[in-house]
View 1 (tube, rainbow, N blue to C red):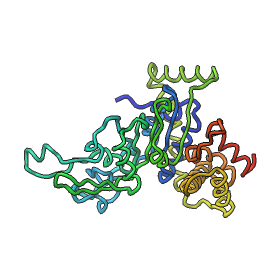
View 2 (tube, helix red, strand yellow):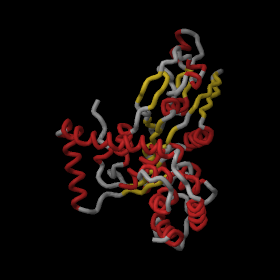
View 3 (cartoon, one colour):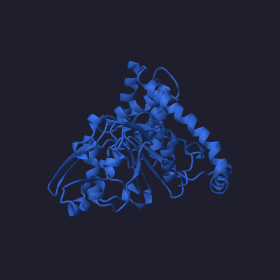
View 4 (tube, rainbow, N blue to C red):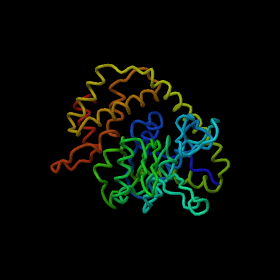
Length: 335
């Protein structure tokens, strides 16, 4: 199977790449929403992310990728305690998918052939400890949106039907992409994404030419191209692993907490999820930069990612949400 386009080889789209790197460092940030026109590299970036992410250690044969035997669900009947390194799961949730395919359901084959009531895990089980990707997320059916909201809130998938009562861990980073011209996202789901990015086609000729060159090399000189960029991906992966370790030692001054709260208050973001997400994103960014303490610079650089989709609409201000965030950041934190 052909390997995905390397993450490091994506031209431009710095906000999108930064957001995905931050969620790889700290998955509790809560996922990434990428909105933009067709052909702007949204799905390419998600596929590339799968190859970039460090592997995880999971119990061999566990359908929910548990790290320890004690975490494997009883219904799975995992025979041994052996663990192995596996690629971080990146699971597609297609439009029109059935609820049974998402949550899991009765294993019909075992029911018919053996008369057993066995559970067939769904996409949520596969995505545990990894990423769940939804293309055209704004077109997702309402009942699937409600289901995802419940699971995202609890971190657990519960299936009770056909005589089954099943529970298993379902903690994943949600990545959604879509075209804003095709419809808006429900506010409840929008709020579940930690970071939000608007992407557009490059407007600089040299950048567009570089996109063409790299895509052409990927398709027609794949071996040499992958050799060149997989080395870059490996270096980036090492930085992510190092940042994860550094995150635990990072210092967070009281002034940084004050800056985060003041900024969210000035923007009028609802609730406290904005503050918490901004803080986590800024800390992850500081760790990625190999800094030892959180500063205003880190907060300033990730503020738009964490807050642009949490702002109340102002009918008298036709500026984009990113521009409005930048304006308030400058007022509160300085240029």
